[in-house]
Image (cartoon, rainbow, N blue to C red; front, side, top):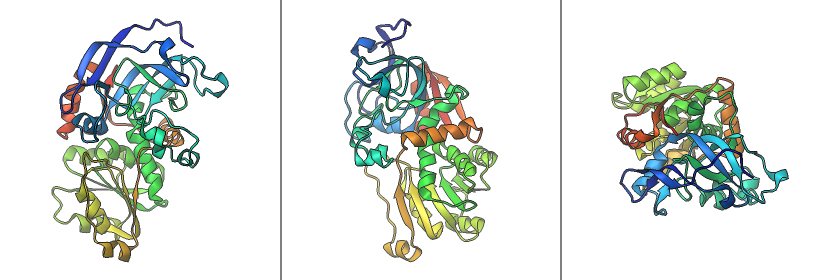
Length: 360
């Protein structure tokens, strides 16, 4: 099934051809034609693609081997131009012309125990079909994905602003759900001024939680307070961050959602969490990073540690719905596709507040 729109044989794409090196930007990369799509696959004309730390980890080789060349990118928005032949129409949740989003997980089996219990990110099929990691991703004009796993994008949402919600948004939203923080309780967010963190502040606000933001710099302080954080602690200027959190929250945060991919904030969180607190680890490091926490502290304080990775199809729909209702807005900057490598250089140097998106 294909649209009447002409589909070129070649188009733009950003390729990883070896680790560490910048993306190779090509304007003659082969475009998968409708006749080449398998059952359940779809061809999406991309409009926007997000710039994420995960892409940086993949490109630097921090997450292990990948196929070369590999089209990078794992979050993006576009419209479906074609659906693979022999895709049962009665079981196809999308149609040609639909506006959809691509996420980290490209597909899932939807039949295993993990999928049946709403834990699709831990489906073995999902783990082996990640956009921009295990399969070609969103940094191209025409992307191939799967009809069962594309996320419908409401027409009322701006494409550039909605693109980061498909990764950063759903990831931090799911993490907040995993924290099981109750209405009116405190959640600490180390890394609050970044791509995940600034969205986490807003999702927490929408859930009725009180936020203490932890980051550094005046720009991030201003952004966090503007978005609704009640307190901001600069980890570079604070002389006793743990005590500062305890003082600000009246005894310690009820939960911490750590979006920073380094050990320090994780270890600190176990100190400033109050009794029965929950630590949710979200920031995915590059390479075998570990952290150390005294066992006695964990037992005495009855602290729970939870790992949370991205989210399910339903999590994505819920995360987008909050944006539709005006509860969440991604602080972002749009760059042309030609500046993709510059965008990643800035991201790697820690110069990005919020999120960067490239227009395809």
